[in-house]
Length: 223
Ligand SMILES: Cc1ncc(C[n+]2csc(CCO)c2C)c(N)n1
Image (cartoon, rainbow, N blue to C red; front, side):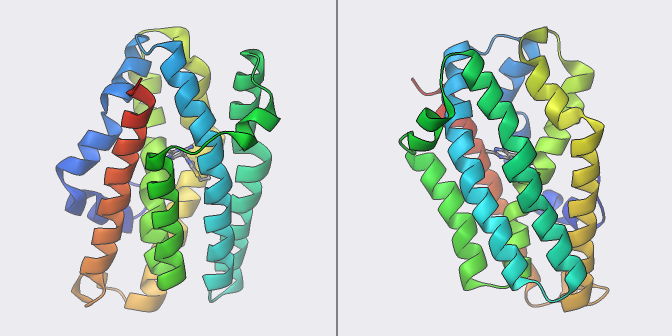
């Protein structure tokens, strides 16, 4: 999965951290069906809270945008998060007897706070590129994981989760976010962004968010 031209450069700069995130033991246990249900639910409850803060981060991106096209793309993501992506969490948890009010009131894990507030701070202290570099591992990493697991899954236990992220709708939104990033980079850094003095900091943002994603999986596995 390339999702544009900027993402592969950031992914390569993150090196081994990218594999540690996208091939984390939690991911591999969804692939082979050995992930304990309790670990998945612990992850899903935290992920609901995560998506609340990610909706805020994409809303911040609307205010950091410089063009109407950027605003539309970020606003569409806010809408998709609030009205579609969180449904997987709400429905899966409801089927396990966990109502949505309990999800909203759940206590945030430190790994969740670290990741979501890091992304929000990247946006508050920087511009749209700083924010997008911190958001990219989440959106595009799940696109990569979903596509791989749908080809490699050995067990149906987590088929709904995999289908959400491997599905055509989600894969299209990954391509759209990839295009948003490419256009935002070209607009602000020109056609050879790797030579910009800002480039190393954007790579560092992407790298840190990638490490925080791996820690988020680890939180799901911790008893
Ligand atoms: C820890 C964690 N990381 C990434 C995602 C996936 N995700 C989060 S926000 C967003 C953008 C809207 O399409 C996507 C795809 C998740 N659910 N949980």
